[in-house]
Image (cartoon, rainbow, N blue to C red; front, side):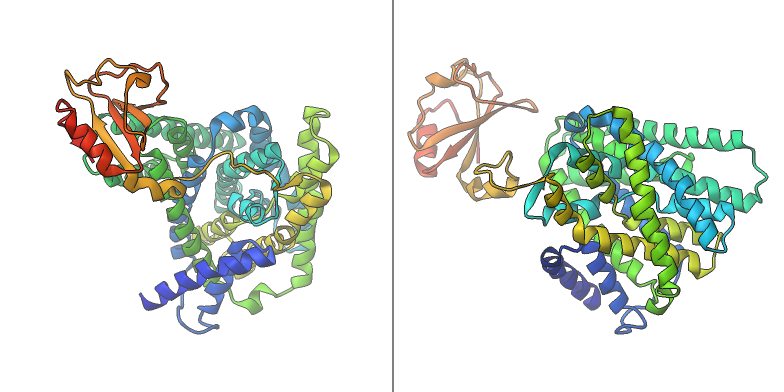
Length: 487
């Protein structure tokens, strides 16, 4: 417990170093894990990649759900075609193209080369946006949305391909192509369907549950995430896709406590990332990672400089002149690798395929190389290409809840009961003290903007901001009819 606490504190403070050095924070977390390794400070010793896959699966469930929860479907729907093609066709093309240099530059078989290609085919949203958030400018909105949609949705496709090539290796190639086509369809359809169904059930639970403790609603969603992931896995659906769809569905619905739920899972996502990356660092021996580093660097450069640009340019060419050359270059360079390829590497190991450490170390090396090279230069490249604009706005499009928490003590909630002097009155006819202001009207589970022409009804709750609480409370008590006041 002592060292876990210390590791968490060091990990959090290391984000300041990440911001100054323009290096994705996952590199810092992995380095902390390596320092806590048996060859570092000899604090923790863990070399079981099977256990690491279990940790990876658990943490990725919440990371992907949080990613879906932060995806605004109404913003990204304009670019759904680009997102679908980049997540599906992009992963497939990357797998096929990258397998060629892996096959010719290593001793691996064709199927194993395809497996390695599938493992590193997906991009990582956390790595991309940890860099962009620390940049001195704001990325072009549509490019940011495309990167967000691609990196959030391509993990499930890569996962299916990894499972397919593992099955090919385990069966010795004695499985029909039709089987794998059906397997792919079942994975995607069942995964998406389960996420959608549990999304509907969750919203119904929220509406019908009469729980008096708001925090329990968050725990309810946490339980649903675990159920969604595990049931999708049990019925051979795609668990990554299931929790991602679940997050998107919940984000698209108007629910009580949605903001606090999003904040909670944002925290959980950060905790899971720290746990995942630090534990991944525990698996690495630096001398093994740096074996044949020249050859591995060449392979990684081929992926970054040749394969990724070919895939991006080929897919975006389908949209004609919608995206100019500078935008395509930025999207190509923005395909950072992250935790998912390493989790896939532990999956490969746990299935008994390619148990030699070279495969795990090769995938790990490619991820580290990608994050360091692309992550440290992405913001600079975006500014040079003119797709990252300087943050010179004098306003913010939205504010977070914590920015107005200071005013919590000034908020009073008043219930309008039958025969109240406020019942059936218009907002503009209510004469509150000058120090008070109606912020919102809550009708059932709906928050209504307090327009001047809004007529109040029995059962409505007025959310009132009062600079002078005592003055407002005295005013309410003097009304005699409003005896059911909640503070």
